Length: 144
Image (cartoon, rainbow, N blue to C red; front, side, top):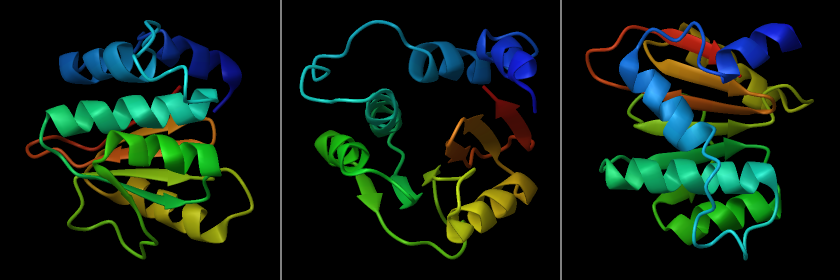
């Protein structure tokens, strides 16, 4: 996927689902500062923090797997709903954040390929992959 199409979907164009569009605007591309941003450094750490808070409000469990920095894991722990663990399969999860999907981490790449084949809504955000298993939804893939 080229950078022009990432930019296009990142602005919300081409997203037909109202819930996916709201998730993009309210969580993934949120521009307003959160109360804990002073202590959280890094764009991806703040993104993980927002995802964890959003999923917690919905009563969903978030699992981190793959390759993450210490700041990203600390941001997830700060939200107190995320757990970091190594996964070999994605079944039985609510939301999974996979780190290092486009790096040299074979485990993350395999999980990401598994997620793309699953009945889930997936978000490819540069080096992070967000996989949301939502009941009654068709598989959908977005690259932003």
